Length: 81
Image (cartoon, rainbow, N blue to C red):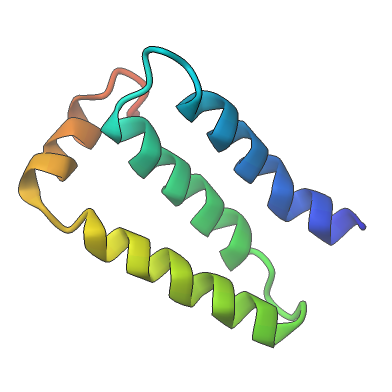
């Protein structure tokens, strides 16, 4: 249950952030980054589930593989690079 909560917590936060009226594309990109970080921390937990999640997140990141999308991410005031 702790592992499931660890993975679902960032997902819930991202969903809530994207439901705001002020949500934009950079919020979605940031959300994917947070979810990816949580999945990556699951080193030895159910490798099949982990690999499936990584595969799906990589598909979504490829959709964002555009300079304009990356620019919105870096211009986001929440970005702390």
